[in-house]
Amino acid sequence: MIWKILQPWNYCSYLRQNIRLLIIFLLSATLVIEGGRFKLSRGNSFRVQPVNAQTLRPEEAAGIVYKKLSYLPKENQYIRKDTERIDPVQTLISRFIRYHRDLKRREPSVSLDWKITLADYLGVNESIKKDRYPGSSTLQNNPLTPDVEAIRELNRHQRQELVDLLVSIYAPKQKKLNLPTIQTESIPEFFQPTPTIGPSLSKPGDADLLK
Image 1 (cartoon, rainbow, N blue to C red):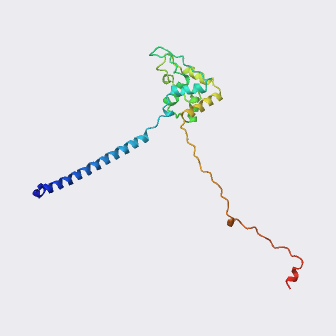
Image 2: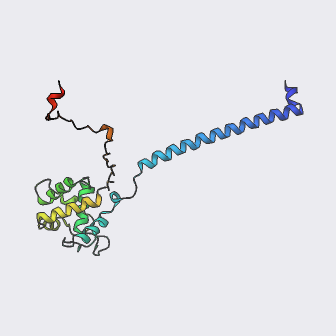
């Protein structure tokens, strides 16, 4: 058996068969590995959310709010502890959003959750802890009391405008479904009912025809 393999012709054919099997094995292994990578990357892509309003920083969202609702007080005169300078992006609305989203872990795209947060500021729901309020650890003066007073000075219409605007910023855009319009087709003539004709009235001379 070994002698037959060592013969030049048999050896070449044997080598070609082994090379062919080796190539087939490598191709199969490559397809399996690439298929696994494709499934893995595909599964990861479904888990990663695209960059949208959900990843918007509170300071950026507050900037949008102040552009739309310019009557809202900014309350951005506080000095930072680390720089000893005024931080203009530390505003009432940015702290309001941080309290709602980061501290209370409430949904930013639900109107009712924002109203619950407003209820905290109005003192009719949960009490806000002063030592955990946004800015308490970074600003020289705790902004909780002035922020609560500023929110309470807003009337009901202004608070509703604030809630509606925040929901429109954080709520995902819903695509409208274009439903096909149902067109009524004309009924063919052979399906249309024929008008019923009643018995005709007798005419003079009809009695003579019966004779």
